[in-house]
Amino acid sequence: MGKKYTALLIIVLVIVGVLIAPYVRAEYLTAKYGLYFEDKYMQTNTLEGVDYCKVLDYNNVHAKVVYVAHGESINVIEFSHIETDDWQISAWKTVWSKSGNTINFMYPIYV
Image (spheres, rainbow, N blue to C red):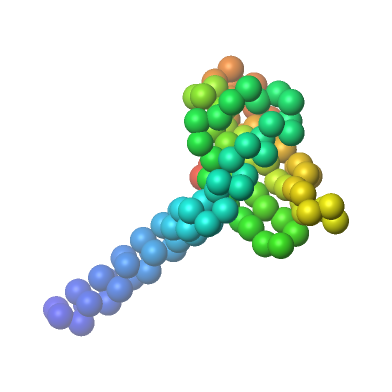
């Protein structure tokens, strides 16, 4: 009974670890780079404000950030680092909208 219990516990821990790993990574990247991307959504000229953002992916040339816009929409915006030392929007998807007119619904957004 002890070996079966231990094996089951290990399996459960691995599954839970795999499921929460993207969220832990996003929290880490947000803590490290979040302030820098906090106002980059304004490049859209459409989003009037956001409640918060989460950095999902980051390297020297690419970043993917989720912006939650006042409970009205959730937007995943990708940025590319250009030679002028600034980040520009390279892709933008609204993955959820209160008005219900999104095209690219995806869940969970951190994967």
